[in-house]
Length: 134
Image 1: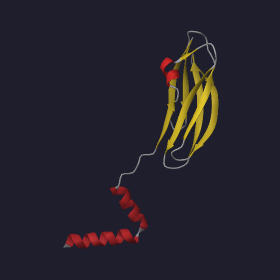
Image 2 (image 1 turned 120 degrees about the horizontal axis):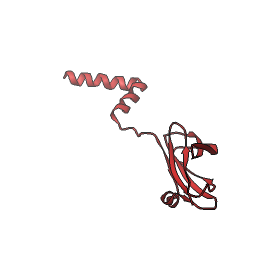
Image 3 (image 1 turned 180 degrees about the vertical axis):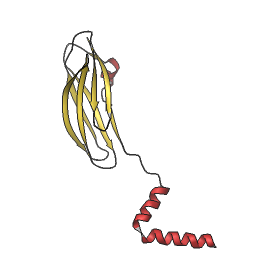
Image 4 (image 1 turned 90 degrees about the horizontal axis):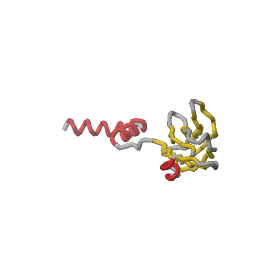
């Protein structure tokens, strides 16, 4: 009997205060974890990692799953022999659930050398692709 009275009082409190109701709902229901997808779009470029003698376009994709509109600060760099070269820097605004595909052109380096292509969208989120120049 006491348990039913207590349960009735809790139910009345939850109905009375919307913030308490919201907190109870958050506590007993599963909430999706907000995240962003960032990946290279072209599997052939990733598999080979080889840049020939002509400039090569390498695509990447950003998908917003954060639950709200988000603005990403996209930075694409090429690191070779300890030197970082900025290829492009831009702002990318995406609504929830929206994907955007972008690409960057990589020009050939010294044959036989390697470089790391880095794509960053801020907050420590980045991807890397090791390139070899033919």
